[in-house]
Image (tube, rainbow, N blue to C red; front, side, top):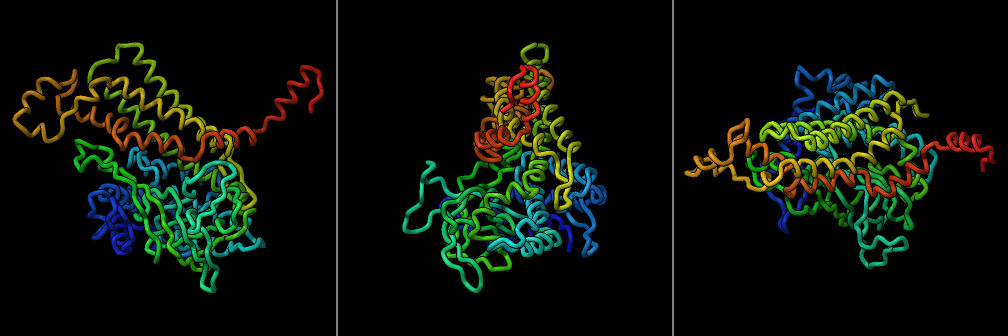
Length: 481
């Protein structure tokens, strides 16, 4: 089958009949026609069309080693630095198609599935582990071009360090039975972006667990019996691309995943009830290296888009002569070039791991993943400051098709643009930074890889500092402890 196009993606999604709840109501009818999901689905379909476009197919796909069909390049296992760069260029094409605004474009989880499967031999010989299932599943996903959501975390009931769940009914998803047919899961998981809008939901336990019943890794179809997706409120302000240029296109619904005695067949189980594996596999695998590689590529494209918005604002109201404007835009430029340099360093310092996979350097990637969550809120603040009150007084598209059009043309014109075009620019700035969609984007980028404090600790603990300590001790002629 190989890489799919947009029509195939939409048809497959509509046929799944996933159980999705929005605003207390079960979603009925075709997902592709639902007003809350339609914009996102159309944008994702455009990504799938791009990978089979004759002008892009060579850059977006590779030939399957099994079927000979073209396969989405995000599924390719990198064996060289050239492979990494080829993958990155593919990420860039999809990211540019969405201006970096789609955090869960298909290449993110395609990469994750590939990375875990590439390191599957780590699971060999370990209790309750099925590396062969993981490898076979990856191959199936690759050949069918499956689309994924995922969930890594449990509900935030009590985040104290010594909390033990003792509720009568499971809150965090748990194994409640082990049968001849598979695992039975009951409870909930967070935070499935695009939950219910994909072929599959990939579920994995990572980190330390006090309760081995909460330890598992598997993937199941999104329409599996007993599986439901409970959506948050929508951040789409409306369907007009004029009024809501970003949210009408790129609103990625987030959801709670509820498992109501869901049966996970054995051939879909990758491991279970093995806390040591849950703690170590995430770091032993190529997941962090390859997933962050994709994410940083997208974030760079998003930063380029923000820089473009900043400059268009400057030209629209002619504020380019002010030095404080130069300073603010230079902050965006410095952030952009820093991210680019870290990504390039990660590729140039890549090395082959024990499984034969070329991993981009994790240190450079980790620094980038710590840097961007601090940069992004500042970028949005800069846009807000530059736009000033102009980002507040924004009429709608309908207003430009009413009897007050003359007033709008007269009083809202820009230095270099008509009133209608000026409002388009400012509405884009508003949707990026101040709408419910825009503020979600800021929070999303801030916590993309989890708790920033834990990430900082991880970088501190893993960074090779020994030689620098030796140098200081040698200079001071003191003992190196």
